[in-house]
Length: 492
Image 1 (cartoon, helix red, strand yellow):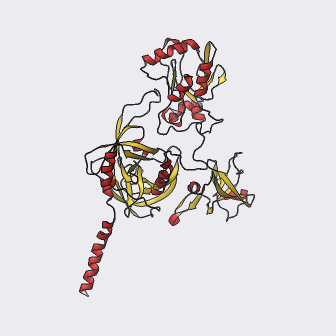
Image 2 (cartoon, helix red, strand yellow):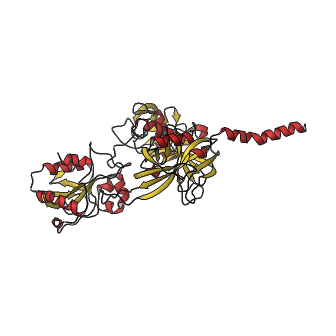
Image 3 (cartoon, one colour):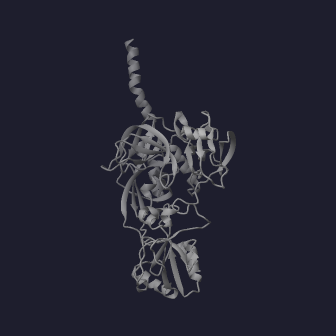
């Protein structure tokens, strides 16, 4: 009996160690990343702000690649990877980036570095399923406060479908492991497999951190396999409201067995009608808060199912219309035709014409301008920020800064970031269109009118404006008059 008891105790003692021995040593595959960030200058878009060095974490994946967060390496002029337990910094190149879902891939620049590095640092495996709520996880990375690899432990506390950045949505996992600046891009592991990538924490709260789950990572990797990031498909219809209120349910004649979201919009491009109740997406029931059930009883927004079920640009739904079930196919796409799209991992475009600097407006401009001032001035940058293009190629054109110094501006003033409305009475459709008008004009004068309240009409002699441009560029140390896209138009 004593011998049997001793054997049992020995097994209980040894088994966990044996199990751990079968697991990969995650520490060998986690790296520190150094990136030199150059922020855009929206008032002087021909230049960039002074370089800043940022650090983050990353880990090895299949294909001799390293996965990290987009915000660790975005707009970087140089990237270095430091292997674990090493003082070396190996030059790396950006392979793919998605700022919205905050993921990026880098690869060591030199083939000899790649061969030696990946021989010693194996790729980590991504988990196939969502992590279980309450499961224990370990977060690996290089947070501030030290040079060595840090490992913290916590539990999975929540899974939800939420907004990331730049109007991008996806699954998000919340953990209570301590995550700090520098952890970004590092793996979070459960039972030896990566269940997510650290990307954010809440500064005002203790031990609340967020992960990009392996499911979203796989979708990103599949997307960029062809060398281009497209993004996941979404339904751009709006607005919807919940069907939780008793009065609105009675008003629509909905019984207690009818659940879903109420469509309250009016869009001729959609098969939906105002007051349709969207009850199912595919075969998945939608509750009155707009949620569906996924793995292990987790409930998330019904929008989570759209990219999974979308085929050939449509997603099947069932709506309740006048008490009857109707099957519809709703159009979905991986991007909205926004009037003011985001820049992505690019710098703002520009064109200098005499003393004025023009830029096509992007959502990033609004983020860097004073939105309240713009709204008070009636600027379309603020008032139309959420709109789609009214016609193909539509683009707002902003005067990105005050006048560059020159005598021809005598008596004129530029209000806060005015948007060009017309030139010589012809409405400006885009910056390309405006440059074509000015390039081909036979008029002696050019009159610039603006949308913004209080902004006077600016009139210049056309020839004087064109002749002064080279002098102004030289005086302000501007090497190029404009971005490639606009120079190709101007030089025709």
